[in-house]
Amino acid sequence: MLYYLFRYLGQFGIPGAHLWSYISFRAILTLVLSLTISVWFGEYFIKWMKRHNANEAQRDVSIDPYGVEKKGVPTMGGLIIILATVVPSLLLGRLRNIYMLMMIATTLWLGLLGFIDDYIKMKVNKDGLRPIYKLAGQAILGLGIGLTLWMSPDAVIHENVQMTNKAGTEIVYKSKPVKSTITTIPFVKNNNISYSEAFRWLGPYRTAAGWIFFVFVTTFIVMAVSNGSNLNDGMDGMCAGNSSIIALALAILAYVSSHVGMASYLNIMYVPQSEELVIFLLAFMGALVGFLWYNAYPAQVFMGDTGSLAIGGIIAVTAVIIHKELLIPLLCFVFLCESVSVLLQTKYAKMGNKRGQKWRVFKRAPIHDAFRIKPGQLGSDLKILWNWPHGCWLESKITTRFWIVTVITSALAIITLKIR
Image 1 (cartoon, one colour):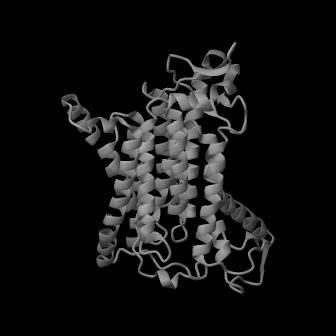
Image 2: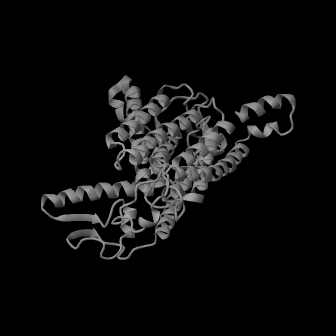
Image 3: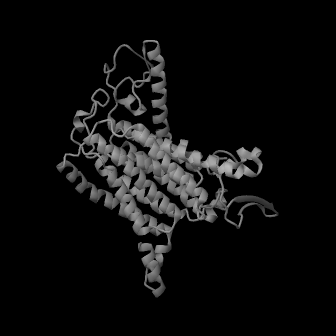
């Protein structure tokens, strides 16, 4: 809104109005504003929730040894993150931008889905919304995002073409923007591949088949990353810290994808209008860092599914928009480990049950729970494949070390633009 106001005032020569045309100025201002809103609103939100006894059910001490200390902590803190992300984006972003609208819709849709789940946990039963309904909500969003990228005339790219002349090799872009299912493959020199190429055997129908496949891939990514962030939200500051690091990495990737000069230098596709993602992502990052003011150990508020589902959706949709979805395993390495650990644990436990034995891959799953099991807390009849660590780490140490892993993997994701 303010972007359009100052753009209008610039016609009358108002000093400073031109600053609003610069992405760097709006992005930094958005970061500061979102962080401020998050810290300011968080204090009032926590007090209001405590007055209305809107607290998370006490955690299982057999899983969380610090569960007793967290009794009476308010939940639904994801509302702080959502407000502090959406408000600055509305104020400082370009609201006619298709990508900005998609990010706001993603945040509100998954935030609502998580809010319903948290509300049911508080008021009805501790199990919350049935998993099938959560998966359905995530799938609907994924389908909507995929179809929008397919159908919208504004969601286009400029394909990069490598040309050799007397001066050497240079990257140029086709002058005509196109709709394309091309995506970036990390660690490969000629690193663009189109989903449509997998359906070359369909002849004239391969483009439509490629887009249909792209929609299903988008849906899967949204569901996978959203659930991964949900699983990662099990310790104070864990998900918010990891996600803020990922948001910064995505903001860098979005910026270079939106800048024709940098995109040419890095030999990646140019995605016009994706610069507005930088505005949104820095608002998102500021909201997460501000939320850590209250969510860092010992937490004064939990984000709940209201926040964790929205966080995963934002990360997934951003990666798809800038055609970097194949970097998600690196960017979201911690989320991936959490999800894989649950799948392995469940599968292995079922195999043991068929033989009348208690088999486990890890001491606990998701994987972060394995690091906070006290000696003697597990039954002697359990057969554990990976019995490490042998002691119980402090929760703050576990969280910090997971953050460090995310810093490393996010940095690796960024430098894949040069490592080919």
